[in-house]
Length: 386
Image (cartoon, rainbow, N blue to C red; front, top):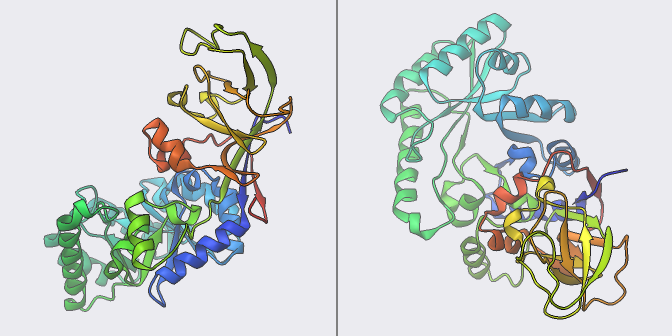
């Protein structure tokens, strides 16, 4: 009750986005909801509970620590899949709790076998192959031996899937690289079939993949940013909506982040606002102070460039974004008073501040801005989109 800001998650928006995603995917494709990075800043507990209520049944995280937090939130029946970091005791924990994870090197496969023996349960693994991302994944030459090791240990290894990760499906500039990845992944699947090893779920596509590269959609797609109502980039939005004759934006932003006016002051002509000389009022200016600064996720790079919504109108940030507050110009907005709602991201009275424009202003990606939102900000679910 004493928080300086609140993040609202719209059930209506998420329902809309899930419907859009399922229509974009091939019929029968399994949806894996990516909730790494604190569900892209939306709050992993609040978001996944809402997503599960709306029909999502599988959630991907990056690390065992995220999986540990997520497991506390989910009800029976939802699956958790770790795409990245899980080693040592964390791997034992994952096997014990039937949590699937990627295996992309020999040492991890060996650890998975030992953990399965120690726990008396099968390790649920997805074999990740290197197709061109050059980050993690078995080289193609190692794949026959890896598959044979899995086949030879059916009491310890349950092969849940074979996968890889696309390196830039959101841009035509990566055309040659993506085409090469597609070919290599097809080769990996063929090798598995040649060795008589069931691959489980074949998965390569991400959000950009299902929209721009539909032939990368196999048995499952790992979808992140689209859930939250954002496009991977403007190019993807323009390509997809033009191709399908869509007018307007079919996605709805799930997040709405707001605070309140803490105080109002009048600055005389010639007066400076905040620290230093970064903003000087040319005429008498009405300034509202909002208890939101870079310590609470509002980027310092938005100094003198960002905007917020007050009474449904855009108010520009004036002066330097401080650690704990920002100052905005409300001169032309009639009736602003202490306690008024201030929207930092989202909609108010028919106007909106998007993370896309927020990101453009601060030279950061949607992904980065969202995941930097502090965990301490309370997240609450609202049924209707504002």
